[in-house]
Length: 313
Image (cartoon, rainbow, N blue to C red; front, side):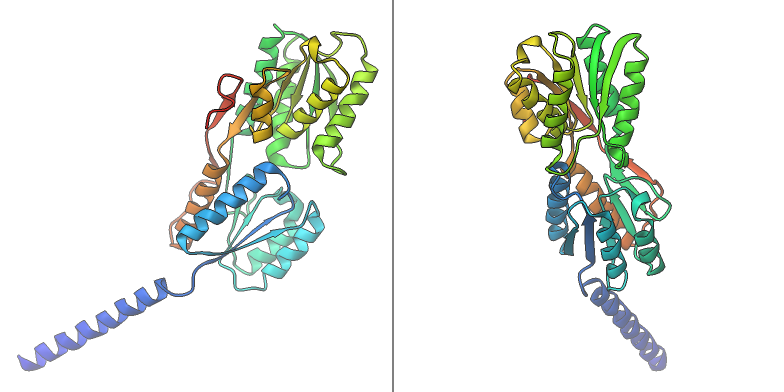
């Protein structure tokens, strides 16, 4: 009996030791996460990165943010550097097809990668984003309805970045499916001095090429900065009284302010950037905790913004 009690006590102590070790492992070094993007200067990206950093701090993570200032090649090089470090996860905000070499390097190192408003890729655990198809459809149909199905539209697009590229495809399809809507021009704004200035310069050229009042009825922009640039060009040309309808996507503070004034800039779509960041953080936490991630893409809801709700929180 004494021997049985002794063995039971030993087993209990051993199990307690294992439990203590497990707790110690859980309370060990905080997970190390690197956020990587070439687009930190863009308002939406900045909001997501800031929110992710905040949520990660709440979880006690060690977060490093790497921005390569629109330099994709530099981002690949930095990813290859990070692959050699003791990192638990990487979060990217960039087209994964443009950084395949970097993704291959971190995959070989066994580091999981998560997309934050990125594109899908077999080397990503998952991507969290807004539904670009739905946002483009909502703003494009807004334009069609405002013009009563008839008019000339200028489009600002950006094909190198999948979440934005898909918006242009859907908007163009909707305009082309409306017989009396004509696409005057499709413009990818220059990023040399930023998309706002690039769009303003491009819109100035379009207005000069179409000087007659009523020759341009609407501007559809795949994100807010080109919409704001077009607005500035229209105002500078003294053509705001023509009632040119402008729509964007993202609902940046600057766009909301412009829309609230009741001028040409009429609508945008609010993405829940903090919500995207939180979903990514939750997925990272679940994955590192051993949970299986079954979806490749997670969509966070959006909301149409007009003058009626532009200043709502």
